[in-house]
Length: 366
Image (tube, rainbow, N blue to C red; front, top):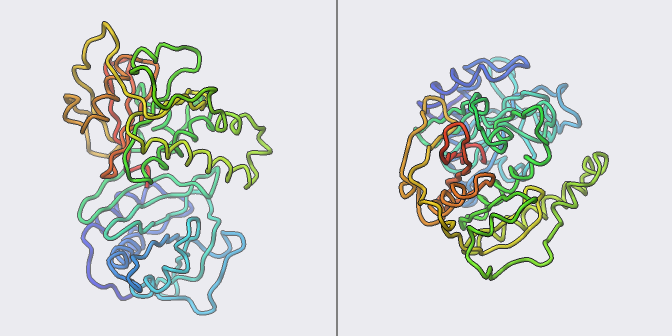
């Protein structure tokens, strides 16, 4: 196989992520080659467009309804760039296998087997290594993110530490035995949609059973919703057979995007833990009689990183500071904050540490 030139990060990360796959997995040399070609393809242009490609290591007999090329396409950056416009829609994967001594793209598919190696070209020099989830081949768990020479391998054990937010557990591909999978999944989708609009924003998740959260909000709320908007909640109450239908999934996507879009307005959007929309554009204030949040523990689910204690002002601007204060004062609430630069932080109260935790999760949202 012809390679443009060596991409040093490809070899380093290939050896580290190989253990995450079992079907059997591609060997590290194959992973390295796919990453290398994907990286150089990401830097190319086709009619002034940057390619967005998803590559999967899979055989034709492992997928349903494959689209098979009569002549396999060599796995080369130029060839991938030409193919890019045909497969840039979400959910379409170019399929790679050995063709003699070389690697080649044999076709495309929308379905993948469990634990399949997937490489997504997100932007110039930005690659995400994923694996398909066993319960749903259309959903993926991020394994590593590569941006230029920066390598971030996801720590899959981060969800097993005490006080780990259910949102983080869901994005890592884990689920606690007593958690409601759909509930956590909605927050995951809201996080992805919030990050996607690129304007930054804050989402507060408060208990549906009380009104104490109002003590941390400036009144009157300019954009309070009366009665509460229950579209998301109503969709989540539908039975399992209905949820499996594509039309229900599309309704949920539109509802999620609608709520996430409100976070682009200055101030915080507020929903309950049952997904009732209460307000948007709300201003957070310190709860009467409560001290200013002194510090937070910053974590990121990346191998080789350790939790660090920081002052709230070090996390970012007003959104981050007010979200940390809100969670400090409302300890049964959750705050999700998207930055315009792509960073995403989940704030939650740790009963074990008696401190606000700021969980940086943008590597899980690509």
